[in-house]
Image (tube, rainbow, N blue to C red; front, top):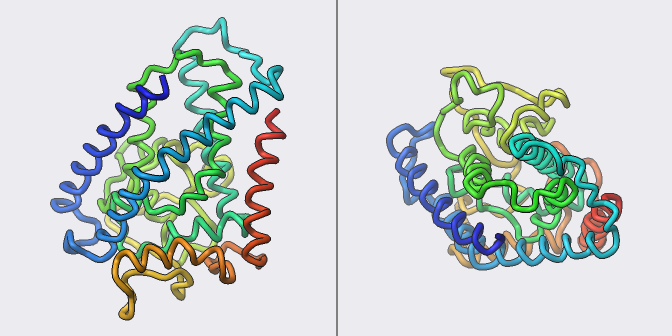
Length: 299
């Protein structure tokens, strides 16, 4: 099931990226050349995502599931095992989306997480490719999203097209277009909605939703874009993370190395949402501990 999903998700995501890049040419929120430095750098992250992040997340997810099944078999209560399939599908997707929202919130509120997540927010030329601009270690914090699949006992009940659709809907919001999804704008996260999350002036950490707006609304963190408004600038104030738009920026690969190693050695980047500073290696330990505690508390 997992192998089949990976085989199908990969081409679907690539097709979405190509289609979104084309849309960005015709209906850009912020017009810019397709060869912009931000696009080139994020394309490198797409390659890194395919070569490193996907295998790593697959191994982590497999290990996470195996650990829970071994140490906490009672957790797999399968409360909806007798429910209609459509109920199970909706329940899993909604709860999984809530887990993604919670993990995203932690990435903004806990210094050890933010120091790695800040790389994603450093992009000043956001595009569909920015979906893949992430430090590989960030993915450890999102393993809790697998809990609904385990606890509710899907047993393959979630159709692959539904899972693929969820992945595509979670990728599209980074596109450089002003789409707000019309009547669905208060239900599904759109590019216009998510751009406000990347606003360089945002100090609250609003619009954290992955696919559903529901969790932002419940937390009082939903801010809806005004139609026709000038798109906000993206990035981090003061450029605490090395960015390719800087006049003294090195080449693509050297910049990639600087961006990936930066959170390991220097003071955590400020972004208006962090208040605590920790030593770099202590941050690594805290991050690993938090991920472990998430798994243990679930069990």
